[in-house]
Amino acid sequence: MPASDPISEKVRWALMRRLIEVLGEEEAETLMESLPPVVWTQIATKDDVKALEERLRPEFTRLEGEFALQLARSTRTVVLSFVGVAVAMLGAMVALAQTGALAA
Image (cartoon, rainbow, N blue to C red; front, side, top):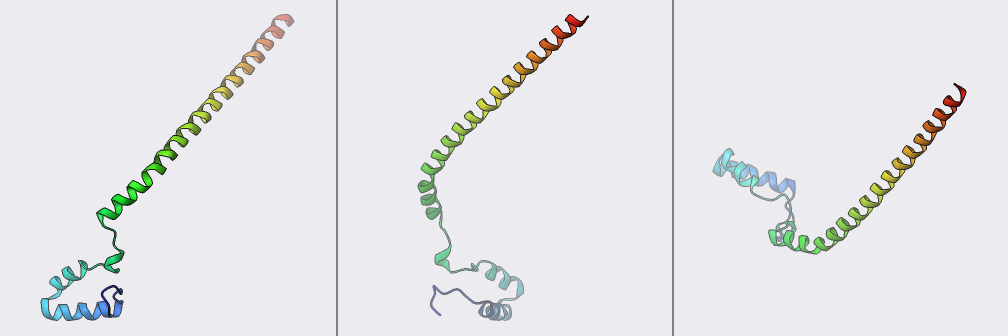
């Protein structure tokens, strides 16, 4: 089996049994836990993560700016809506007060 092929569970268990015979259970478990469950070439390194971060940073910066713009627009809409409702309520209260004053 080439080194790039993943180890099957059957082969993994056979290896575990043999390691227990040779090393003992605790040492065999320690060794098996240090082996990856995937092919070594599929494991990301710190350099891989750093390269991905550098590729994605401009996109995150763009999205951050877009999010800030949308938040500002939404905030303005909510504030103007509240002002509109407050003005309408004030007008209604003034109208009711004048109607009540005329009736009295």
